[in-house]
Length: 80
Image (cartoon, rainbow, N blue to C red; front, top):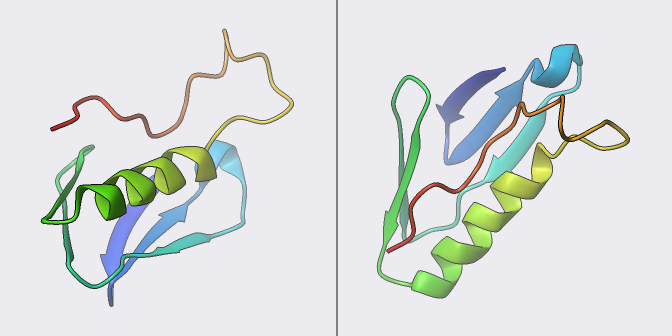
Protein backbone atom coordinates (compact mmCIF):
# COMPACT_ATOMS: atom_id res chain seq x y z
CA UNK A 1 0.00 0.00 0.00
CA UNK A 2 1.31 3.43 -0.96
CA UNK A 3 0.19 6.63 0.77
CA UNK A 4 0.60 10.18 -0.55
CA UNK A 5 -0.57 13.63 0.49
CA UNK A 6 -1.29 15.96 -2.44
CA UNK A 7 -3.42 19.12 -2.59
CA UNK A 8 -5.36 18.42 0.64
CA UNK A 9 -6.09 14.84 -0.42
CA UNK A 10 -4.87 11.55 0.98
CA UNK A 11 -4.20 9.18 -1.91
CA UNK A 12 -4.12 5.43 -1.24
CA UNK A 13 -2.69 3.27 -4.03
CA UNK A 14 -2.03 -0.44 -4.42
CA UNK A 15 -4.22 -1.55 -1.52
CA UNK A 16 -4.09 -5.38 -1.42
CA UNK A 17 -2.65 -5.39 -4.94
CA UNK A 18 -5.62 -3.55 -6.46
CA UNK A 19 -5.30 -0.98 -9.20
CA UNK A 20 -7.97 1.36 -7.93
CA UNK A 21 -6.89 4.63 -6.33
CA UNK A 22 -8.76 5.91 -3.30
CA UNK A 23 -8.76 9.66 -2.72
CA UNK A 24 -9.94 11.10 0.58
CA UNK A 25 -10.30 14.85 0.81
CA UNK A 26 -8.91 16.43 3.96
CA UNK A 27 -11.26 19.20 5.15
CA UNK A 28 -10.14 22.72 5.91
CA UNK A 29 -8.99 23.09 9.51
CA UNK A 30 -7.29 19.68 9.66
CA UNK A 31 -3.53 19.33 9.35
CA UNK A 32 -2.40 15.92 8.13
CA UNK A 33 1.21 14.73 8.17
CA UNK A 34 2.51 11.51 6.74
CA UNK A 35 5.57 9.71 8.08
CA UNK A 36 6.77 6.35 6.75
CA UNK A 37 3.79 4.32 7.92
CA UNK A 38 1.91 6.73 10.17
CA UNK A 39 -0.72 9.37 9.42
CA UNK A 40 -1.13 12.10 12.02
CA UNK A 41 -4.24 14.31 12.05
CA UNK A 42 -4.26 17.57 14.00
CA UNK A 43 -6.95 20.19 14.46
CA UNK A 44 -9.27 21.94 16.88
CA UNK A 45 -12.60 20.29 15.98
CA UNK A 46 -12.51 16.82 17.56
CA UNK A 47 -15.71 15.72 15.80
CA UNK A 48 -14.25 16.57 12.38
CA UNK A 49 -11.04 14.71 13.22
CA UNK A 50 -12.95 11.64 14.41
CA UNK A 51 -15.11 11.55 11.29
CA UNK A 52 -12.07 11.86 9.03
CA UNK A 53 -10.16 9.14 10.92
CA UNK A 54 -13.17 6.81 10.68
CA UNK A 55 -13.54 7.54 6.96
CA UNK A 56 -9.88 6.74 6.34
CA UNK A 57 -10.08 3.53 8.40
CA UNK A 58 -13.26 2.30 6.66
CA UNK A 59 -12.03 3.10 3.15
CA UNK A 60 -9.35 0.40 3.34
CA UNK A 61 -11.26 -2.30 5.17
CA UNK A 62 -10.83 -5.84 3.82
CA UNK A 63 -14.20 -6.84 2.42
CA UNK A 64 -15.23 -10.41 1.64
CA UNK A 65 -11.97 -11.69 3.12
CA UNK A 66 -11.16 -13.60 6.28
CA UNK A 67 -10.20 -10.81 8.69
CA UNK A 68 -8.00 -13.19 10.69
CA UNK A 69 -5.67 -13.57 7.69
CA UNK A 70 -5.96 -10.25 5.84
CA UNK A 71 -4.92 -7.63 8.39
CA UNK A 72 -3.68 -5.07 5.87
CA UNK A 73 -5.23 -1.64 6.35
CA UNK A 74 -5.14 1.62 8.24
CA UNK A 75 -6.10 1.51 11.90
CA UNK A 76 -6.67 4.12 14.61
CA UNK A 77 -4.03 3.46 17.26
CA UNK A 78 -4.27 6.53 19.48
CA UNK A 79 -7.13 8.86 20.34
CA UNK A 80 -6.79 12.24 22.09
